[in-house]
Image (cartoon, rainbow, N blue to C red):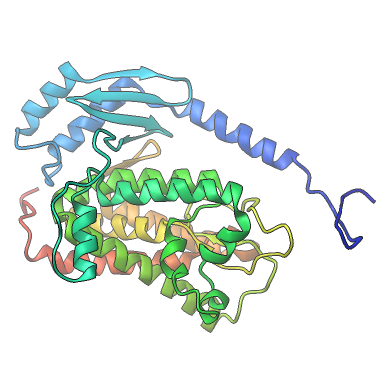
Length: 350
């Protein structure tokens, strides 16, 4: 019998590696086939210039479009394309363009924040050169590296489950929202965070966007615990944590070497869905460009929810998709956006 022999004499069968190699090859082929063109960058910048959030500044949409057509540059790097305009850099990948974080000034300014601890933390984060969505992306990348090097620690402290909360690890309600064990899951969520984060930051401001993201993180974790842990019964042991990704299937998750992990939920898809729903509520006539598709914002939100329902109702464990966490995040995003909408100048004529 082939496999790996443990210290107590037990033999653990080795998992075949060809599925992982096949998945990696499919991902590389997809990246190569969906690399955006330079003309798509110009179209992306034109859509940003026409967006009512005013993300690209106070210039008219026509002036911004002309500036983009003359000053925008891009270069292909095989699997992706990098573009630039006026000091801003853009990444084209999987048929989608996203604005990259600026790494010129990583540390926050020296201005000291006063008030409560929560207000101080929010002020500290808002004085950083990184926007809230960019901060979550950077944290997610860091935790993904820890999944590769310290899987036992990550299963214990960065997977949200009823068992973890009952054992006192309540911080998993938040840490799970920045935890991604599989790279495709991480890539999918980072694309949505970096795509919608700047638009909502320009509309809501840093403090309100932070409030939306934090509330969505807690709501998605709470919805997952309620649906999977309380109403659905305690998850069975030995299963992989369910990724909160509407487009990712079950993957080979890193697990502790000594004991299997308890089933749970992880990923930033709850926060990403809150942004998708908030964008749909604030700008129902705006177009969303993702994965080569162009959809009205409400249709994009509806498409993700339909994919979640289909994935959750097909196959064992819904293909590893935690639709309850997505629904919790989307509900919070939509509700908060509708509440803030009354006090925002959203260009009703758009």
